[in-house]
Length: 289
Image (cartoon, rainbow, N blue to C red):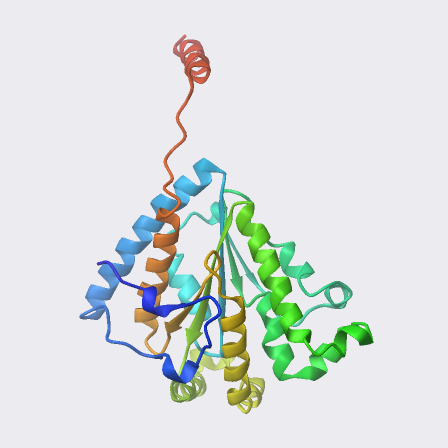
């Protein structure tokens, strides 16, 4: 089943209004059994494309996931990437920065985790936290030790957006393809998921009082996401606003977008030249003896 995801892409320079973007759409599957068949088909295709990516060793793929709490980032990563070879895929989750990380520029800690050529890298949260939570809670920014002239700049956030887009342009020029997913969750669905985390014992560990404290800033976060998505979605490093109220639907959308990006590289297995063929035949003769 082919999914048209163009409507979910944030256009470069778009004035984003999240209230106008859906958190739920008509399901792409007819039943749970149908969903399993579709996602397994996507996973099988992803496995083939990952193998080609590794064999070509000329590109890498960076997937960035950002969202409000309980939007399903962990679930999406787990279900969509379940079939890929662990040797060719790394997941990094970025929490509160350490003292050493705070002593560097805001891109430093994530830059150390960028995927090598032939690899898929996944950022569960990323450097985008620096224009999201840091913007909503300025006390975090004040703890970063920046010079006063930087903090007082009227275009401070625009400068950070530019640093991000400059980095992503640099990475694209050097073979890293970047896809960014904003899992667009409704406030009501977040409430329901929080309640399930309380009511179901095996989900208690996922919930903390900090989640409720962050919920108080819902409107501020929506505004920060709107500004961020519009300022940093580009032709080569796009954002996709994925309706996230239905997790299974979101998994199908995300996996299709990743597949489209990998297939767009038009990869094939490297062909051996004449010298390599002669070398292989010589080795074969030795093995035959």
